[in-house]
Amino acid sequence: MQAVQNVMRHYSVETTQKTLDWVALMGAASGMYVPRLAAISIRRKSVKRSAPRPQAAPANPQGASVVQIVPDMASGAGFQEGV
Image (cartoon, rainbow, N blue to C red; front, top):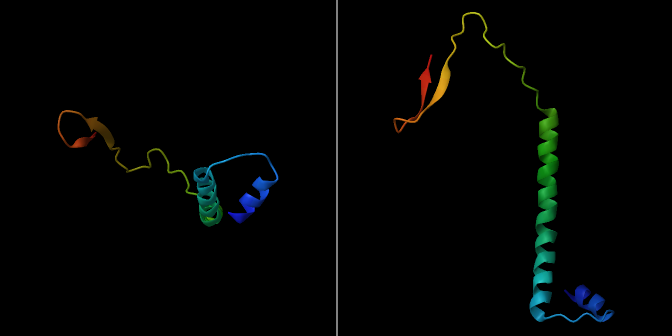
């Protein structure tokens, strides 16, 4: 906060204490949470790169039955299996 006030002395910008408090809050919050968000992003990208990519299954392998799931608007269940 002191650094913000020092810079503000060099310019003819007038502000309220409320604005300075908001600037201080945003500075403190970004100082804490931006590094965390960056670490999470880096970790997710490294996991995504190292994870094996799933192979697409054949549309209907021999012997497999086809199950179609359709919305069931009449009952309260939501979905039902239909053949």
